[in-house]
Length: 70
Image 1 (cartoon, rainbow, N blue to C red):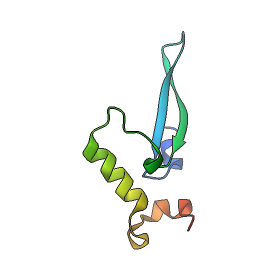
Image 2: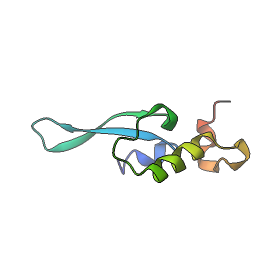
Image 3: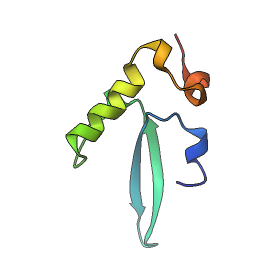
Image 4: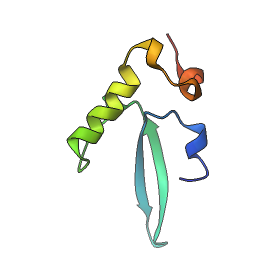
């Protein structure tokens, strides 16, 4: 995750799974926060991510501007 985090927007949901027989984890996919289920995550943390992803355009962080599509 540390290797790929700089290339992801600050508001993203990352699905991670255990690779059978290896004891290692792998990223399965990255999704839009409002498109994902929160599973066992803290509801307040989930809301923070969704609000960051869908908040006003004038509050978008500079690092996230390349991910803005509309």
